[in-house]
Image 1 (cartoon, rainbow, N blue to C red):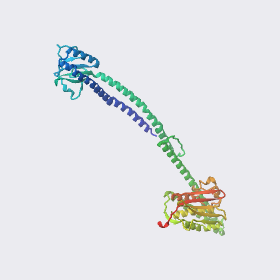
Image 2 (cartoon, rainbow, N blue to C red):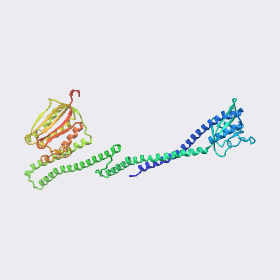
Image 3 (cartoon, rainbow, N blue to C red):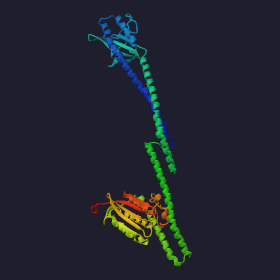
Length: 474
């Protein structure tokens, strides 16, 4: 077996792990950073707005001094770990919390443009070249008398957010590793409950393909794989039985053909070389005729059984009087009955009893059962054919008081060519196919045939057919 399925599953598992880490390292990293920036910017913007509406507004309305505002911004600088500016619309620095207050040293933010925010309340970068590293900056306007007097700008380093991002990603990586390791449980389950049973099933199919139909394996599972294994074993066992039956079939056919052919060959050679004198030729020609009739009967039975199996028993159903068919079958066996002085009793329900079935094949079943009963009845015995109506069905019984069937042979009598030890001496012309043919025909009608027998007492065969209430409806 090429070990591709398991390798594919392992490869898929590894690819899952690699792509998971790539997804976390790229998409999750960017999403985390954006979330941290938004949260930080929202916090700083609230502070900038508060400053713009209080200290900065008071500064422009001369309600407080520059030193007082500087002192407050310095305290907030430490608290927020950020640089706080107050700048004029022209870009001139008024207060810088990161530097001492110096009115003589004027600082201008070149190219300052408050529209840089583009509708947002934060931006990232060096803020018009004011810093060497990347900063997150928020800007809030200072308005008095419905006029923008200046802006409060708060800058915070991106390095802190990068550290926070790395910490969060480290947690994500740890979780990914744990998930990856825990997902190995799926791999273990797949190996134990899918891959290993499939390997056993595959090994079994290779054994069966090699002809070893007796190979056994076990899969303790109640799921679909267990059902597949059980079905495969059942199939192998049925094939094994079929092979055994085929071997038995060939052996039985060979034996049943060899016996009459040997007799025919021996008698003909004896007649030709003069061992049997001419005045006795007529006697031995009669024996040869009986042997050829035996071969003909065996051949016809084989053809009949083969057609039943191959064509699935093609039925030509019609409505007919089963009582009349029984009478006709009994009449055809009159010579055989007289030869053994057997009395035939017909116990039939009513004058007419209509059933729906294949009349020709049912007549064959009756003939086979009656022929069987005659063979195994003692001279001067009694055979009874009886019909009984019950639950919209008619039960036809063929009963004799002959040698009976041993208990251990009851389940085997339906097998092809089977003959009980008791019958071998009596059934000189039998083929062992009559009961097999009868069962095939009755089964094709979706009905049942059973046997009740006691060794030394006799046997009774019973089969059923559906009754038709009014034959005129058909």
